[in-house]
Image (cartoon, rainbow, N blue to C red; front, top):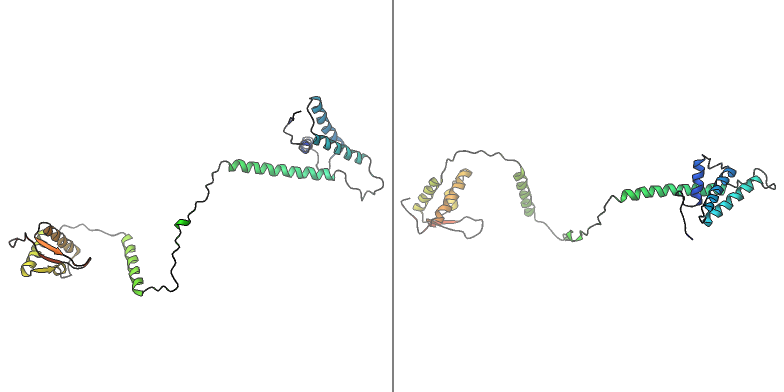
Length: 244
């Protein structure tokens, strides 16, 4: 014994819906005689092709014949007002099955559309979370707030576009070297701040610094600093030349 699926009918209800649609039958007012005849023709066609008819098709066939008989021989004991339509249960089944087919088609289309998508499972980012929290007893000094504000203000200022003017060099390293020599001839030791009146331009400051580096490199001077970022002392080196 084997099972054969004909014309994409998935059971007797599917066949009935096909017949109703093909013959343009009103599902709420089914002519049972015509529908039963068409249904039985399909059953007979399967038998002629020696195809085993599923029991569910035979069950529905018997239900159609019973409904047809009840409509031909109504119960005389009931009045017309109280008589129930024998087709009512069949109509409910057909409508329910029709809705299921529509929902199945909708879900199938969504499944097909979803097959074109790829979903990545969520990643565990908990190790990036910072669990540090300030204690309720933590206090912040006003000075620290001011320093933080100044740092942020400086960072904002650095991000702003600045205008740069390129000018011809007006103060040379040779002039700065001569100035340092003159200071060291007057004193055995001077500080970096001693070279300035604090009215100089940035160019003067940078030129003095470069001159000091060059003189220290050649051994003309020695530079000593006792603490980072503080003023430093300048003394004569082993190669200091008084005549320079």
